Amino acid sequence: MTLLGGYNALERVQLVIITLMPEAEEDVRTALAWAKAPAIDSVVSFASVIIFASGFMIGGARLLHSEQLVPAGLKLLEYQA
Image (cartoon, rainbow, N blue to C red; front, side, top):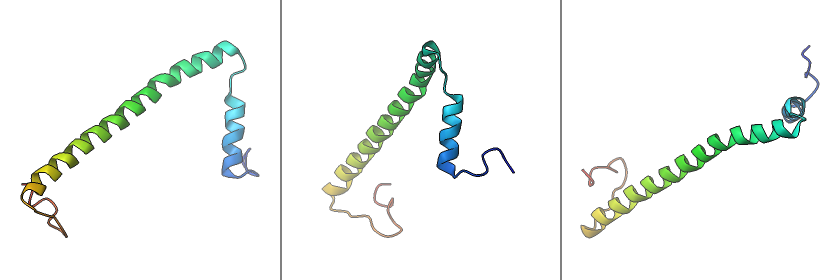
């Protein structure tokens, strides 16, 4: 039997977080500072994906709309080539 055997998954995560949470205020500030970089990276990456995907969708719509072509079925990329 494991140490956390009697708890469900959510309770286990909560126990681990409570156990690992630093008590000193400076440790909390340091942890938050270290967490900023991945958070910023995730936001910038997600925004970049949205911008580039939107650009491709708008470009495809402009290209296909002028010729009244509507891709369908398995030939979704045929008109864009």
